[in-house]
Image (cartoon, rainbow, N blue to C red):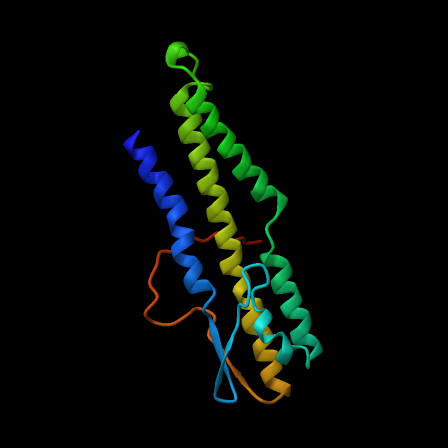
Length: 168
């Protein structure tokens, strides 16, 4: 029980700590800092004023924002995981011999499903960052003022990353 509470707190506290950092990305344009992410739903929107001047950059920015939107699949996985956890807490231990509807299986299975959904979502967002970087590079090839932007953040930000790679 203590482990499940710890996992629950770590799982829901991590996005709150990362939210402050994600909304504070800046780019430098004409020696001025420009906020890149003006809202959590439209990341990269702060650069739209500049990137709209170049059609290729604008299309890449639109694709970047489209790929960052939540999907129904991740919402369904998270909802089903939450339902499994709630079902596990409501389940009595009188039927301990049932393997798939056991209380512990439901709780830990739901937590694992939510964690997998979160990791897939964060991996997709991380792999999508190249589109924003490419959009800025395309703009800088043909337009002025130049935009100086590093999407990975500064050197003082530390963390652990998990990725999924597709090879054909």
